[in-house]
Amino acid sequence: MYEPILHPPISPDRFIIRVLRHVAVAVLILLVSIVIGMAGYQYFEQLSWRSAFLNSAMLLGGMGPVDAPHTDGGKIFAGLYALYAGLVFIVLAGLILAPLVHRVMHKFHWADDQ
Image (cartoon, rainbow, N blue to C red; front, top):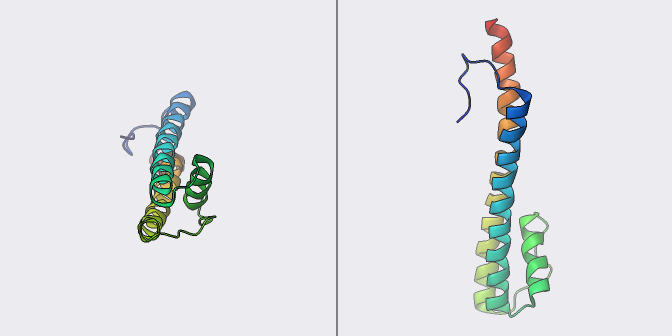
């Protein structure tokens, strides 16, 4: 996916496009995750779409839910969604930082080879 160590780093314009692609994929994953959370909260807890959005966004942001679940199904969903949200948070951070870290590491290695 990225240029090998023996090739020079890509141009700044291509690098910006790479970063924007990573951000676009991260935003898509985030939107899909919010929709999943909203659907679950609406189905299991009968929350309004605004409350379902708030709970989903808070969990995906690492803050925790606003409304405590009351039904058994809602409690199971909230627990599974919280685990999922934690993983999504880590994946999105890695996805956004990957091109930046690669660029820095590539520049260090490229400087050694010249």
